[in-house]
Amino acid sequence: MKKKILRWTKIFVLFYCIVGIALYYLQDYFLFHPTVLPRNYQYHFNVPFSEVEIPFNKTDTLNMVKFTPVDSVRKGVVIYFHGNRENINRFAKFSTNFTKLGYEVWMADYPGYGKSVGNRTEKILYQQSIQLYKMASSKYAKNSIVIYGKSFGTGIAAYLAAEYDCKQLILETPYYSIPDLLGAYTLIYPIQRMSKYKIPTYQYLKDIKVPITIFHGTDDWVIPYSCAEKLKEVLKTTDQFVTIEKGSHNDLNDFPLYHQKLDSLLKL
Image (tube, rainbow, N blue to C red; front, top):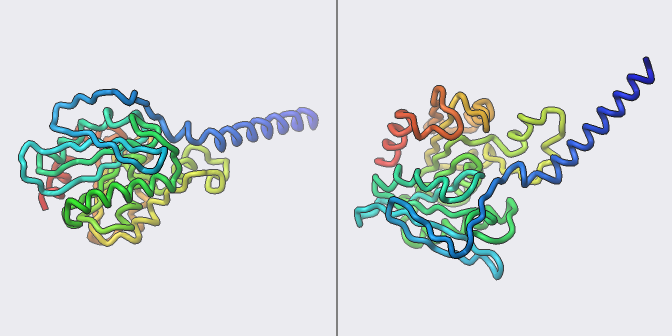
């Protein structure tokens, strides 16, 4: 009996170590799911747009698409940080939520996504978000800049809003932090120490003075509702946490409540 227990203990420890090593070294594969596009790829969207290449350093270049309203009058700009899948093509359809109300939408791909090239680290993602903000602030007043984050992009958006003034921050399906999110799936591992990416959204929200609005669905199977709900602890009394009943991770755009709330925010 003791030999059998010892054998199964060894098997468990071996399995635990193998999975732990995989979690540590394959984090980028778990977190990021990019689709690369050839440099000569031509975008095709049903809304007016222009493509911009942004040199970041000697080797890294960000590819950004500017979606523009049909009307020549601009109310402001939305700096949009998208999720961790594919590239701009996947998220372009959401630009009309903002362009219909007179906002430009600036949507850049992260390094390794679409036509953006270069290294991808947490620090670099922050630095590139600042570069986008500085470009936007050279054209628009700070009270005309809306920072929007979706899924993975919510942490980057929160960082930027904590560092620079804007009109408001809007987060769709955010997470408390990357270790907290990974920990929801890997309960028996010390993810806080293992995670290469921290992106402590909760920490950044504490330092944001402008209005914050969060949208999250109760049936989110990617970023559980409970992970986002913890962010309520750091919100100001004037901030909003909008719960979409039966909403999941990718379908909040299908709910009338989402559009009612978003339209009212953008019309302010």
